[in-house]
Image (cartoon, rainbow over all chains, first blue to last red):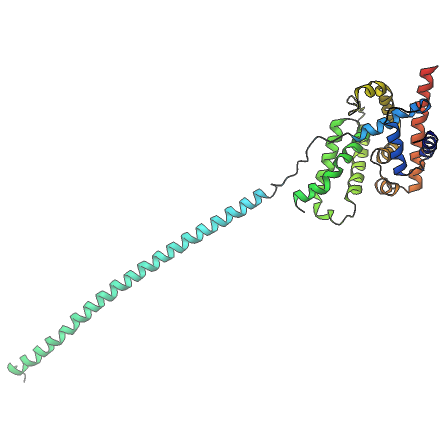
Length: 140
Length: 169
């Protein structure tokens, strides 16, 4: 780029009326090696700005993605605890029901046997009647 | 907003935040701290991020405010900032030797500028923001920014010329 143009741009630059693109042209001009001698004093300024652009942050961003990890663990723990309690309780109840059923069965067995026992008493009454026919008692 | 998505929006301008912080706070460590702090704040506000149409300008403003607060508390605590880690990177050896002195001299001049002008110079000459974008960060109108920018650039030139003449005569 011709020198006159650069000088004009520089003038505008110090009035801060250059566009971003014109400033890029200036920076490009000053970062090459053959800068006109009377402009060399500005070179360090543009060089400095060019250098600054290469600065980079080296530290990583420590975000906390596991922040609600603990919360979920506690939720899971509570869930497991309640289900195990519930299952435990349910098991107990089932066992009780089973015992009750067993007991009922035993009792019904007993009553059945008792009923067969009781039905045999009929023979006894028959025997009593027949006996009364044969043996006439005093008060008859 | 998921972490990956957040990083995708934030990482492109993370270095810009760092450079702005470094311009104001001078030391590497403090600039890193400031960047981290600002990003953490952004992360905690991640649900609102989508509402901002310009996250970068918002983050830059946060960085600026954070650094100015830091500087204020520094001054109150009577601590002086000393910089010892200025290096110009990525220059060929010859150029480095040639320019090292005068480039670090520019750095010294920059240090003398008031904070507002430092921020504007950084945003314009390093990050190449246009005036509207700068206006969002520093909360000034474009004309005032132009005046401040011109003043800052002229100040650097004046100091450079002074040094130049001094060296010659």
